[in-house]
Image (cartoon, rainbow, N blue to C red; front, top):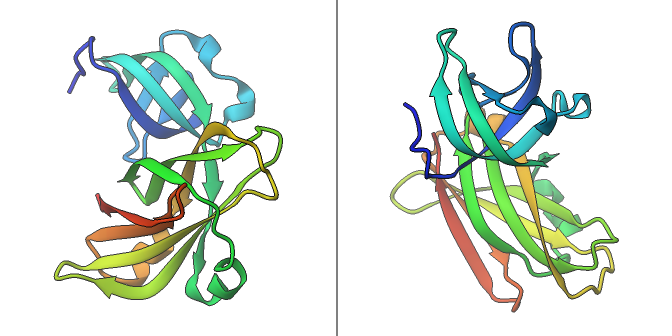
Length: 195
């Protein structure tokens, strides 16, 4: 399934050290992607998830894929909190944007946009409710953003990856609906299909 050279592709994958391939990316469906330029990866990323943009993909005879990487950014790996935690985070609600959200393997990956100074770490809590909505089996999740007293006005972005394995094992759902508060403090939501 080679990608067209003119088309950029993005994914969140885990960096691994493989005996035959060296430092590489491993997708959530266990495919191995080897960058054409080994300098895009460092040993400090081994075992961590990264947001990766690449331009081409060529299948190799050993079943791995050779890719031209244009961008690598470490993704924050965060837990999903259970609904009994809502009381301690429900009062937190700085605005956030969700320009992209998708599931891969047992992860929910999101690109988040928010305003800040780039000097204070922001927290993003994803809280699972016991609620399913709609005719299709859709689990409701609530996203909370805590700016940590950061009053900065620069638009920032971050990639987060939530391990949703326990949610998938606990209930039979086809979709996730993430509700959150936007920058203008209006409520919004995004719905993501499970793989």
